[in-house]
Amino acid sequence: MKTLRLSAFLTAVFVTQILFAQVTEKWTLEKCVDYAFKNNITIKQAGLTSNVSSNQLLQSKLNLLPSVNASASYDFNFGNSINPVTYTFTNGNSQTSQVGLQGSLTLFNGLQQIYNIQKSKYDLLASQYDYENAKTNMALNIASAYLQILLNREIVQVAEEQRKITEQQKETVKKKFDAGVLPETSFLEVDAQLSRDEANVINNQGVYDISVVTLKQMLQLPIGQAFEIDIPNVNADNMANISDLSSVGVYNYAVKNQPSIKSAEARWLSSQSAEKVAKGYITPTFSLGYNLFSGYTNAPNETFSTQPPYIVNTPADPFFTQLNHNLKDILAFQVTMPIFGKGQIFTNISNAKLQQQIKQLDLESAKAKLMADVEQAYTNAKVAAENYVANKKSYESAQKSYFSLQKRFDAGLVTNFDLQQSKNTVATAESDMARAKYTYVFRVKILDYYQGKALTLN
Image (cartoon, rainbow, N blue to C red; front, side, top):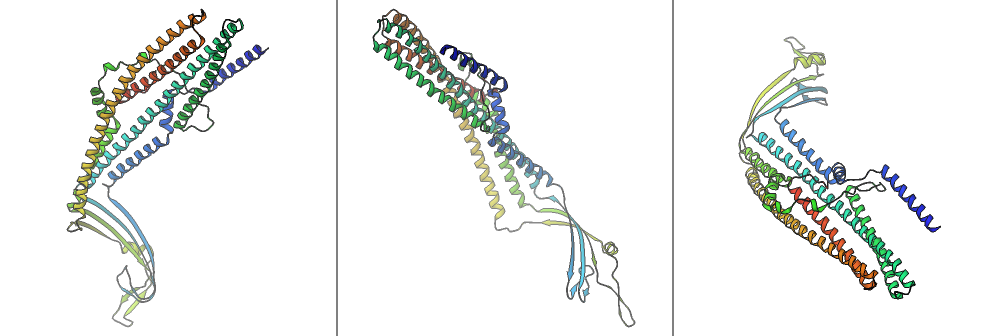
């Protein structure tokens, strides 16, 4: 009866998992990376920063165009005043209105606008490369978390396999104990080992669950959203041969293509343009201006006569009539020459030169860091490859030793304690091999990143 119930339960679980898998799309590494590119807050911020730089570049180009402004006013004057329209003395309250159109165009200012456009172009490039760098860093972090899940999953499987082996051994020892072939201590030893194996499965399952949550949080998925990753067949034996690469070759490619280096180069070029902009303030500025004005007043028109009364007031002309009669325009050519500004211009030039030196050092620092990172990554990959090969051999040897002890145990030549020790050695070796494998895979993926290769486990 218990067997039937267990079978029914397992069947229900199996069917449920099949149905769940059909409605839940599994997350591949590529899907995780693509989702992060579109939804991660840090990457969104980098994208918005790039958009700001794009707007600044557009504005620097628009600064070449003339500026045009319109103005209008309506004034209530109380008491005697000078009429701003007729420039005559007005006795008493009056109302006036003025409209105008002003335009100005910079003809030359030391090429500041041209150099500012160049600076804005380099600033935009730097922000775009920062955006790409944020994406690649996020992709590496996600790949690390993804591989950690695969590693923890294999360790859970190893622990579950060991538990099953111990469970089978317990049945075998139980039969021999019942037959009087083995003492009770042998049965108690294997029973205690089974308890340890079960606890090990639970602990490793907890570590696996935490690693899944970690990746889910990196993707910033909503709480409660179903999340199940795809399990690819990661075969470390098919990875690229590290001996075919060289740290110098990887660096020579990376220094020309890494977004972090390109960003530093763009900022250095931007600082050069900024120095030229600062020097432009030394030169005179030539500009062209145009003003168009007209006005209206409600003050009466005054007509002079040789006969008394000598001044005759007539009603003011209509609004639009006055605007037409009072229309006047001014075309002006202006030259502005800086003479003394408390040394601010020369201070700005000096600071611009210093900023250029700082950006050049930033570029050299970025290249030096990249060289160190590439050399470290290459060395880590070589060590990881050798470590994986060694752990694989260790696992194969431990497995052969266990199979040999199993036969001797069945023949009654070794104790159950010796067999359990050998089984634990196999489990440890298999777990170490799994860690070495995924460490090796990740190290190779870092080298792929420096070589501009796609981040994939296929």
